[in-house]
Length: 273
View 1: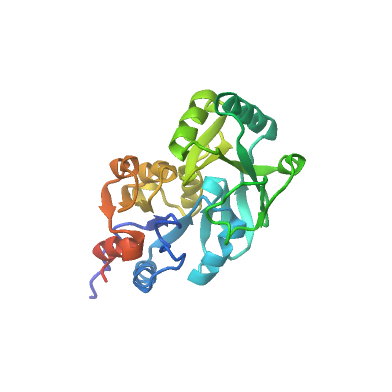
View 2: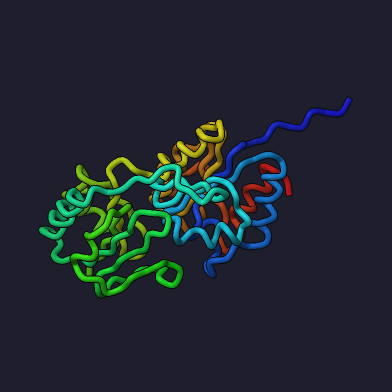
């Protein structure tokens, strides 16, 4: 009688994209591809969990040959890749967002905004002077006037300040507007205002439930503060080498960097390689 297959160490692998699964050149290393293929061939499920909206995640999913569920928009969009449809779409109340922006600007002075519009093909509509760190990959409409920023339903707003760092700006935003909106650091000099209570973990929990899985079944990888709820939710949280200290403190282990195929290094240990 043949031996029964050994149980999976984790039935669900959740990976952030930028700074985690993707290398600095925005590609996925061959070693990482092979490790994910091995894990999924053994029966594990892989879910991409990203701050990017669906419209600027689709090309990465296509490159992976990905046909499962993806969690996009900081948890606000659970996307069925094969069916090309949203299973969830959480939007930010624009009146609440206006209040939050006004409260922040009362302390910091003028902010530069970009609106991440809702919908499968939503674009990022940016005010003049807004600098997006992924502008080359983002469906970006630059130099929009004030009315255009607020004209359509949005998932979130990106906010920047001329002199404040993302840490400084996020600190002010949490202090004066944290009871109205969620606040996450999105990249250098950039902060996101989200629907209150929305995190990558809320979207991931929904997607996992659709697959009959839970946090106890999950290993999660991330590199930024917005990944902390996901790392906490998972049974095993992995921070990347370049992650800030607060992310490493929330994780169960620290992997090599994204340019060193850190995701693969950890998966090979658990799934073989």
